[in-house]
Image 1 (spheres, one colour):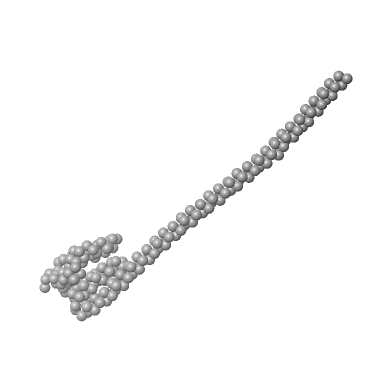
Image 2 (image 1 turned 90 degrees about the vertical axis):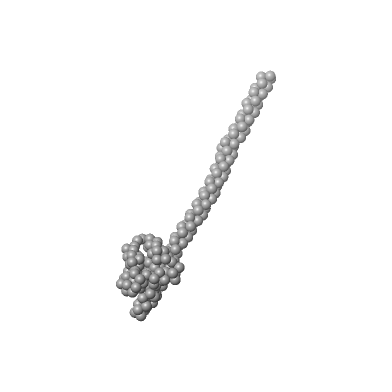
Length: 201
């Protein structure tokens, strides 16, 4: 009888141990086979979402930066273009003013009002230089040298510059300053030389 009880106890022990082993194994399987992969998948998805969000933010920031740089570049090009157009307009405007004085000087020259013609031509010369109208500038210089200077006195020339509150030297220095590309330096020096050597009639 005692042997049977011992056998039963052993059998119950093994059955109990087996049941515990099955339960423990099931729990371990559940943890490692279901819960951990689920947690891993959850964490992986969360990391992917965070990375995706970061990429979107970075992309948006890059797009905004690119947009800003593009706007600045367009604004810069626009301002440069406006500046060029304005400068070109100013040049043309000065050239047109020079033409008006050129025509007025021609009228004075035909009327033999050499002093008035000289004033008009000198002023037109300056405006043509600003407007970079070198063809008309050369014509004006020729008129001054051949038609005006031989028919006026040095006092006349001094009087012309006094009306503009400038000396002869100031005027020609200003012309040289305007002619930064040295297109007309020879003409300017020639005019100055002939103006300086005028004799009183």
